[in-house]
Length: 387
Image (cartoon, rainbow, N blue to C red; front, side, top):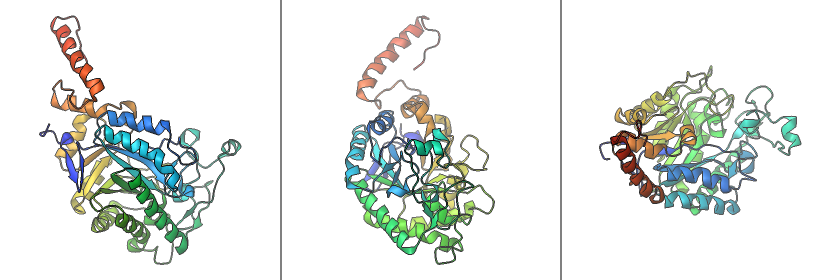
């Protein structure tokens, strides 16, 4: 498989991914008081069984008030380590790298689960026990009309949250994760500091890009200091805001250069999400619509990148890597549709009926099934044989 870039191993420090496919962090909004449960184990475990090189746990809040919704995972307490350790252990037993995204939702915290409306909490949510909490951000500017008004963060608030991020990183290591990603995208806390739309402070943490970047870079520097130097460190960014007056790709390229100086290994290139639901943006959506951001950041900031967003087909993913547009491919909802996407991609790109990379419990049977179907096809008993 060495000729196929999607299945080339990649080593960062002491950690080796068996291929370049990463399960993107996908919020499930199914935790209770921040604790992982059987849903998270099965949801992430089936994707590890599907052959991804790395499986990343969804946005996990570093403090209770940093949750997007009441259903978010958390790592603000030592008691939450065991549930996530169970998930990390299973992922690693399948030959995948276990990763976790650490987050604070900022002014977009305390909102509905998406299937409830993906907006501010309503009377119906309150009646079901989803009560709001105080939210905060760089400036007292709500996400949109009807959303909670955030309290402007003080320097003490910033210090507390910075320490909380570090504590969650230490707990992530205790839980057995080998990669962490700091979430600085989609309108959540660190992104809201970066964007001139949501950050209108007049102190050292506002103003020009240098000032607006100060708190996110302080958090990332502090987390990098407590995370082992030989373990990979990712940061997710919104490459553009996609709203008038918002971040442009040139701003994020400059931010990415600073990330590299701090020891960030990979920049995860998403977009949008500042003023509405998670990834809402005016950027036209099409296959691989965020790949050009990954390409520019990779080349102009000289840092490894991960491409994400409507990458649906193995040939498409392979082309992104071959063209030097990214170093890793993150797959999200396509893996919800088909958790076996990685091993199916291997079959499609190699054109070989080999099942060595499937879990033994399945591969042993599927190899024999393929031989049987081949014989049936040869005898014209099966006109169109699938694999």
